Image 1: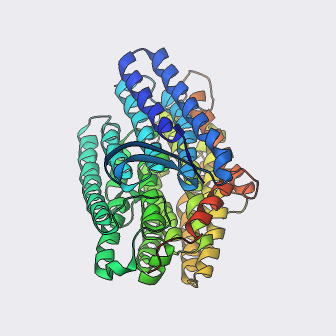
Image 2: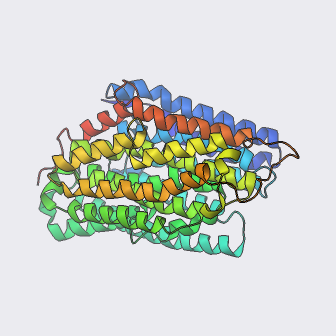
Length: 501
């Protein structure tokens, strides 16, 4: 049931307004933090206020402006969009707390927090986009808003990373635009409100071109190999930005776009006949294994996490490509499961760098004695990515395996097993070094003669996000939890009503 409501447009507008206020107050630390936290709480309140209706099947819609008949900027908070927006708005709050502590005394904090808010605004705009035009506008705005964050340090390395980032993502945006234009030309609509808007009567070649353009366009940000090259290089950005890129904004928006193409542009019925998602599933499986293999060789902590992200994002793509309800459930819930586990890891790595100056795996022997709470949180996130029961990652792997069997594609279960072993191979050595190897030298402290964990503004988000990893693992069947929203979304994707070729 569709209900006209302004909240789907107010949610992205709040953080957009926050960015303007941050730029306006300039160097006033008090007002910058006040507006940032106020916007974060208002945004979360707006999203949460729609949750009861979403669980009842209500979809909140709002038409902002129509340029020509059927083409305009419109917003739609369906179950999948709500799921993504809920994750984004929650993590924006925790990332903001972390960033305040991490960026203390850093350069250009006004620019940093202003564009930080703009990134979240565009992310929620993508989540609530009713059509491909609205999606594309926010998708490309996200690219522009993220660039100043990637090049924040303005070193030659950072500027090079920014150029590579723009090259990849703007080319990807071009493919997405071509695909969207073709969709409008052949379907007469750009809406994402249906389980499929294209018809098999259009012919396989035309549909193949559309699918390829849209998948490449969104797959760039999703890090699908070989479109992933920008992502490890972008790790030169400050850790809060890396956390934003990997858990909240850019890469997750790419994966979200790919799933929208599968479920809302083509629909499972049409793709089931065309078979376009079969090669996509194998490409996702290759990305899962190949990027995990590369992660084994990375000594730099953030680069190891970057290749892990590339692998984990393809779980979402693989789940969507299998075209079964159980696999779709895994794809959607992994949006949250990956986000909270990966942001925990980035927060810990950033805290280690800020507290001890260490940035490489080979440098953290005995770090658990110096930072026990942080490393406990990292260990929880590592167990989740491996798929240990009672963690969020186990829920993803369980449903993805069931979805693969449901699709009569048992070989993808083998991919999940190999992936779990590889995850253990590049995360457990970090845990082993931290807990079971003696420190090579006394750990530095921030205050003479005092040994403590790290700054409270860094530690608090670490603990909360690690707790979420466990919470999502043990409350999957609890009504009102994210899993319930995912089930509502899956029902809408597989309820029929799509175009039968």
